[in-house]
Image (tube, rainbow, N blue to C red; front, side, top):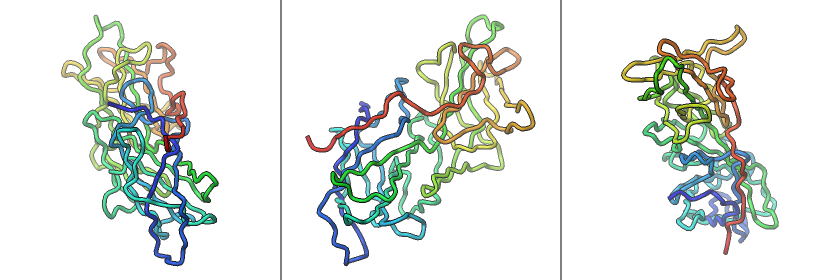
Length: 315
């Protein structure tokens, strides 16, 4: 069962590791307050709820000063797991280093994206398209120059680093009834490299055109017969095609820029939702410019009406 992500100040008790034997560590536990800004983690229940399930994990890093590829973190990848009581459980204990140390903290969700020996500036990622949209929602949190506060609480703000694509379908009256759609796919990159230092995601563009199948949403958007979604690499400059399969026949929408100043691809932006509204005829697929509230193609924040935060430390 999914649990609503109403977490925040979480007791993280870890072991602090350092090569500097002269540092006198405090005896104060780090407590972490987590947020996802105004954005939420993908959920498949169509309720825009921010949800994790027991067993979800994120990885924590910390530097005693500005983090960089040449500065080894003194908290070097501590795994934190969500328990059945909806509290995060650290794999080991960590304390604030000193009262005056400027700590840089980095959180990466899910922790499984970080393999043994992975370089944080060059993490390879292959999208999981087995119907698990939520699996591709990579989150990153960065809190720089944090000194130990009086309440020992560190705010760790997560945000989406991938882009989300939604496709809504309606049909011309050339169809007697709404047809059954077998699949909706886009020529999207199937893998990417991630630099968790710079927050950059780079799609891996192959020599042959790739194709990824979108997942049908349980509840279609208002005014549409079907809606589909997928999480994709931002900045995919080859993405310009959506292929709809009906009764073994393909119907293709190919994006064409309105003028020479427009890009030749459908824009995918980190932390944003690109929505493409299509009207399907028997001979042609067009942007739906006349549907209920439709604007053809829109880009909006990957948002929810709630900013989850709260104290989950102690009783």
